[in-house]
Length: 169
Image (cartoon, rainbow, N blue to C red; front, top):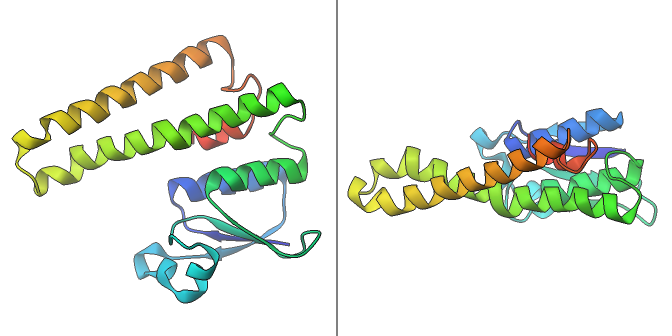
């Protein structure tokens, strides 16, 4: 049985989508971020940086596996089930490339753009925000254009429906 430590954050939802798409029975353990649950010693032992999501595959061959980071979890579940992560080398790495583009590029850049647009103006002189707001907005726009080009050539980011698409939800 896999225990999914979950709260409906963006990354938590990715893992839930994958779990549902694969038809995996799981125990869902809510971790209420509004009540500080991620900062309990029990959760921190599973997920050292206190973020969602995390899983424990309790009956994994060789013993329990604890895992965090939505990308690693998506890849693990794809390999475990044989679904949404192509078995051929080229397809697998096309899918993984789509995922790492999300986690290393679009996700962080969009997060920074959102922060500087929404929260920073309450704390910093708006004139000092012109550069970071422009920088992150421009980079997010560029990354969306890259994704649009890929989707203009293929119905899905990696050519077929895969963890790359789930990563971008």
